[in-house]
Length: 614
Image 1 (cartoon, helix red, strand yellow):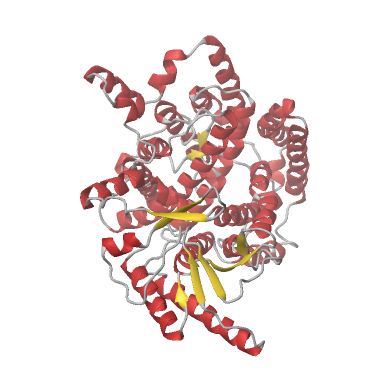
Image 2 (cartoon, rainbow, N blue to C red):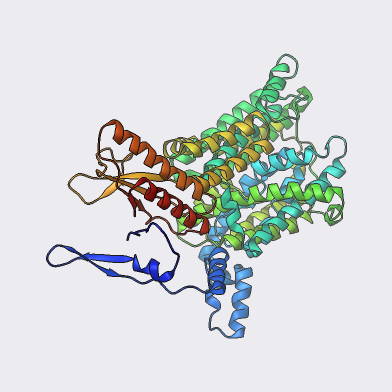
């Protein structure tokens, strides 16, 4: 469909409709035309409600409630809030066996990881275990993913520890530090739940996949570098996270800070852990090898240190881990005052990153098992579990990719595997924690290094480079920001570049000059199709975006500049000048008043230059 624009455009429905045509080819081969009237004008209220519904309720969450009795609506409401009531009705012994095996397997992986991740957050080891006890129970009741394994994760632990440490020094005031951690966790949960209840989950999509790849890869390298303290046995280590400060601290301690026994233990078990991961990757039926390798490493290294008294020769150990289940931390949470404001800022950032990671993991495994994941339900579930966790001495928990992958491969059927894992952690807290006293810190460092290596997705970065150079810039900006400055700066760069890309695409839409493909009636972008030829006496331009106030001037100036350039080129080659300007607007899905004025502007300019525009 094409629009002929007269020299003096009058915006009346009658005149506009008179220029709208549809055509087909008649029996004699000649095109015939007939007028097509405008569609009926939409009422403002109906148009507004339709837009809001599409924005916030695109998935039609109330569809199942239609034409149902009140009792059924109540049941459906409870099932929507607590999905366990839905899948629990069909639960059987076969599913329980799968969930039991998966739960025991991920528990063997999570216990040593939790102890190490707590250190990333500058907390005592038991707080990592606390965070794998209460949050998974809450998630099992409210979560809609069958495969996500809940607990502390490396990136969020490092981010939370770095941000809170910037406000309170844990070495000087550990009590206030923990209070700020619990406050930040509370507000992280509030942020997540609010996004879910208000159906604002689409906001996390503003952080592009490329930026996430770069941020995660940079965070993985930063986390691995931080583990050099425990891996090498260094006592005096920098509190900064950038690679320059870390390497300066490492090489500055080479003559008097490194401990060869620690390095030997750490290196031996790191090789063991990486070998186990390699075996599991090559033969998926042996997935359990990499799952039990961390706990096996902890048991063997602890026994080795105990019988050799290596702790008396400079090998740093975990020492005592507080026994017992989570104590209440409600009285540590600040709801008003300066710490509450700091906790809100830190919690909002940590909560969004945790939400992004969990959503990505959930969608990945949902697509692999071919079931739908409700993003807004996930946000509510994650938010409620972190709010509850903040009151029970937990810090921000989310979906762990390594544990979720093991959970999936172990044959989990439902979120009940999280309940099994939580039960094992409970037994560990009540009975086994004293046995970790002689666990060397080097083992925890080795476990974390082997875990975060998988976050460095170089294949995704290469693919991003091949597809979109601007996306690659966002990826590398986030990566180098994290590695060379700090985690928060890297995150800020990731968000800034993601928004800059959106603004660039909105304000600078794609436009193209079209040419005819020889021996066809097809017109294509002459830059993408070198064989396409311009039509003599015509300039055919295509606009590949809606025209809004933010880009209308650019579209007008771009078309006028093309007209000028083409005219100069034709004069230089002594060719006939342009007589017709054709603007292909099929891709234009919407146009506002600024766009209409822009169309009028270059229509007027074309008439003054002596050619017609269509």
